Amino acid sequence: MRRTLATALPLCLLVLSCSHLAQAFGPDEGLDSAKAILDLGIQYYNEKRYSQAIAQYQKVLSDFPGTEYVAEAQFRIANVYHWGIKEPEEALVAYQTVVDNYPDSQFARTALVRMGSIIRHEPEIASTHSPIPIPSWMLWLSIYGIKRNIMQEGVSRMNIWNC
Image (tube, rainbow, N blue to C red; front, side, top):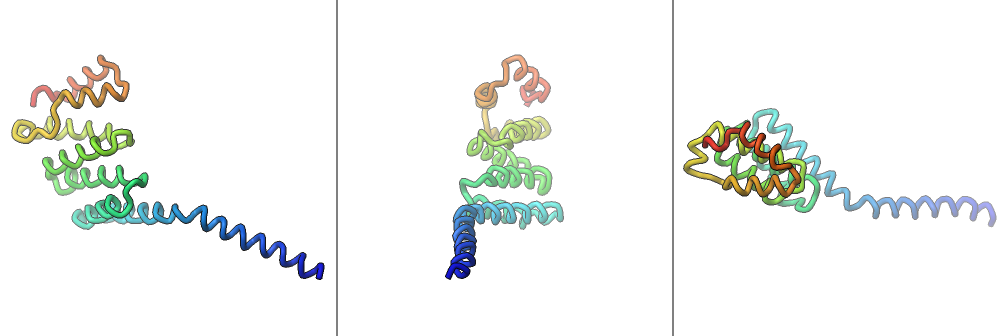
């Protein structure tokens, strides 16, 4: 009896701990899938299969909202339009979506800089289709604590006033 109890007790503890681990790590399965889909999109982008890359990034946005990967997926969609397909108007809209929907993400500031770059290099887009007014840029930047003189210096370097 004692021997059976001695072997049964560790076995029961092992089963209970495994079921506890399964419950603890269950929600992360979605994160792993979102990361895998995002990585597949990156692979497609590197292979210049841009439509497949966008499809994978959009799948992350639709199937895994609220995960840490959605801001990156939207940012990568913008990058495909900007650097891959070379459709600056679509890139501006996609970068603006990053800024609007994920302002606290690490991708929002880079999206703003890339928007400024597109506007600088494609002035006809700025004159015919301005996705954001310049004052909203300043408001956004001031909210995130960039001092006025640094902001003015950065804006003048980007030459966005010459659009």
